[in-house]
Length: 116
Image 1 (tube, one colour):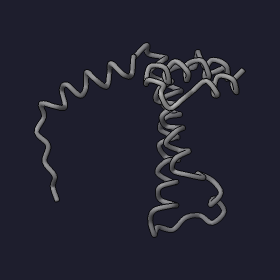
Image 2 (tube, rainbow, N blue to C red):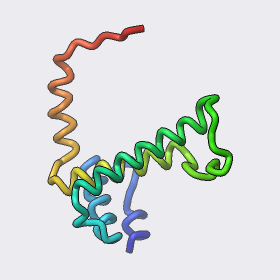
Image 3 (cartoon, helix red, strand yellow):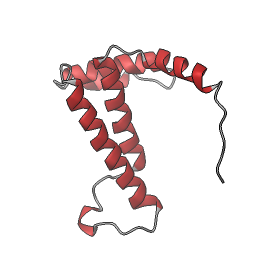
Image 4 (cartoon, helix red, strand yellow):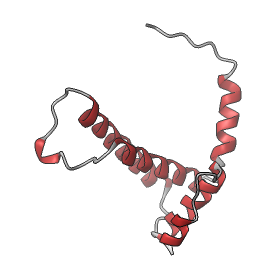
């Protein structure tokens, strides 16, 4: 069932459709009633994995050689962060598209300064 659901995604899906897809997948995997606090901790963990993947692939910083196989790609970790973030939105009944539009109406009126 998950494979059919995945195959139903296309490049033309809206953000709302993707949010609905993630809701279905999370429910299928048994995490639909996960407490928001646990999902938030998972989000922080996934953001840490994203940071590790970026560090591993894009810097000259030292990395534990035994963990080189972990955090395979930045793209994969970005996807994990997105999935968990959208899951949190679903748990809180937040339409991520509407939240984005609302926030951007506020950001448009801000003055941004680059410190460089």
